[in-house]
Length: 144
Image: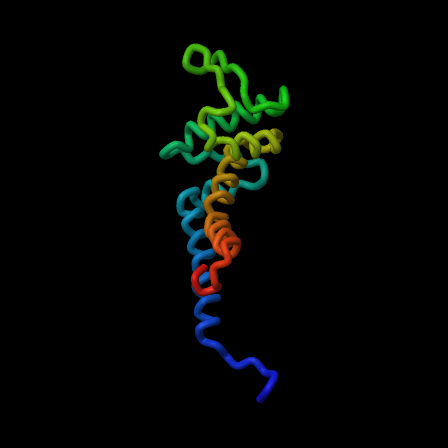
């Protein structure tokens, strides 16, 4: 019949593969952060931030930059309690900027919870960002 759409297996397979990438991205992020670090204990629960690889240092820089952001509107300053006095510059360790802003935006929440949710959102958004970049460069739906 003219005007009706027939079932296209290729289009369905592409949509299923795209959805699977998004689901696997979220599952991978959940595996890194851990379900217990995101849920349980209620709203007032104090959660430990994930502390493997560079996340411990990013948590420190996130708290420090968030504090500087709330106190002076900038993410750099001087910490006299770290390494016998530490000048934190805006250029050093740029991978902690997301954590500085998230911990600065939510100062009244538990820092461990804010950090863990920030890590989860960042990691789970990667497949979506890759899909958006592929669409931006004009790749066909099958190539995305």
